[in-house]
Length: 253
Length: 302
Image (cartoon, rainbow over all chains, first blue to last red):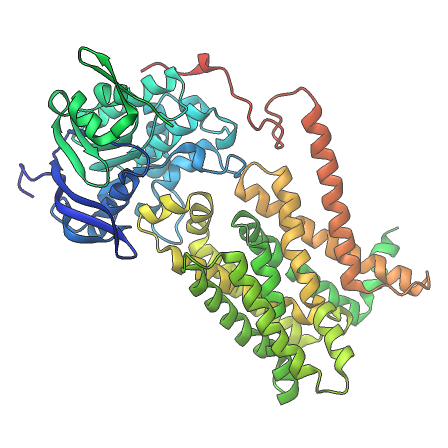
């Protein structure tokens, strides 16, 4: 791999379910250690774009490549962090067992997690500040802690591209700090990060680039040049409220 | 006392029934954990009905009943997996359609026979006391096959039950895993048809795993408890029906007695865990502490 090759490269991609286009003309790239916030209203296609990067939604025009490969061929290099509250809190698994699931593709069929896998899972839990909760049942943890366990699962996958879907929804301040710190360390180690979010503050804290999305790409570029009142209004329509000066907030329905 | 518990098993037919029940207790205990975690109770119920035409055809043609049931079990598993991939057909509707259409084929075929009702009763409730060596061997082979496959794909099936999207994102083939699990459940149903019938196998798959689900905080613990509960209820049910029939003069169907014991166990566990939940003790290893958020001060800083 050439050292300057982007981790994620999207060229004029259109994505579709059942041949009906959901997102069109997305264009941009994410390099090693870079973080991009995927921002747009509900139904803008953020989740669809993430799924396309995972190879779960077809690209009908243009292309998406991960480390120079089609998404399906690069899955081992990509980790996905779902929203914690999408998972059944009554499911009988411990925090450590959830993190170990991130090792399954490496472990393969039949075999049980070995010593190396357990060590990787424990150090991933440690990285999100949950070393002491390894044996706790997943559903007993708070919403923020569950989100951190899922990030730990992604860390245990040792990914080169990390995709997160609304990681701060309903997450307490302490957990948010720990999530941001862990993301920062992943980036220092060279992982590229894509975060789908409504949270402009999160974009400012965790990312250096923004992709503004509303069924098509409204803008893609450095934070300061992209999170402008004009572009936010273009992406959110009436939902964007200007506060005067440079401040814009996004009202959520 | 021990005489009361062991004496009936000196009879060869009781020995075979006991062996069959032990095998089924383990098989349905392990498979039931996946049925309950993946919420496939209705699908399992459908499978128990859709193997009916297979049993009837095999009966009419003089083939092995298990073979007929197997063919239609596999057909059902494949049909349901295909229908589930169509997002416009709700899975419960798909199950209901497959269940009723195949079951009615079976009824049409069987209603042309003279011994109609007795065949149907055998299919629905089984006849555990008439299990022979060949039946036992069939159950043994199917148990080995099902447990063998679960040893290969068990942890992936748990992942898919817990987080289907995450599993797909990791590259696991969702449809293939679903098909594999549906086929395994079909095999369990086939293994149990002769002994306990199709109505009761639903109970043996769901009830022990549901009881275990109330008690266990891990899948492994849930599996052990489900097997134990299936085996104990099988043994207890056989024993109770034997004594009540021989000395009590009450004729009790063995299969149905097993299910009564299973359900009584489930209700006892349900009551016990409900009581435990009311105690103001957080993090009671049972299922009491759901929703309880531990203090954040134990969190290690960045």
